[in-house]
Length: 153
Image (cartoon, rainbow, N blue to C red; front, top):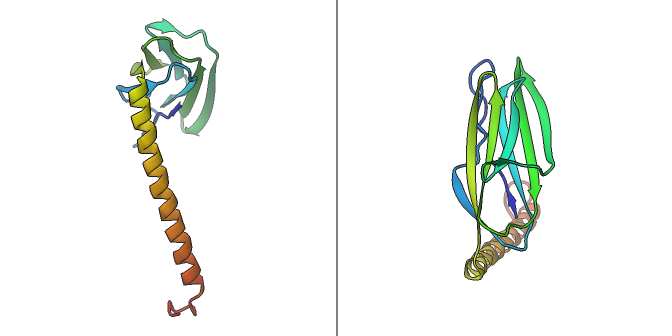
């Protein structure tokens, strides 16, 4: 499973620290699945992201990418791939800078088999709806391409 963290755009001038957005929420994971966590933050050039699991700094290799945004602002994206969980865990992504520090947290809990089946059923329903939408769009496109350019058959 992939958990994507959303970034809010930098508004106004100058660099300021925007917190990493892990959305203070819970996600269900399966005990046999590895997972990815993504974290993004905007701040001054010295901003760095630090990862913690259950209050301890991660020893897992962390990948980080930095992109200059202009002025002294930088976007830092970081991701970590973790092995399957054996118990519930809380992950933290902390943005650290001379401008200040901010932390976001996410609780990961092991999903029961019933929850996993419900999620799979819901995903299958969405997949079917999207496939039907794609089929209808394709039919509409074929009809439109058969028009004389005026929208008339």
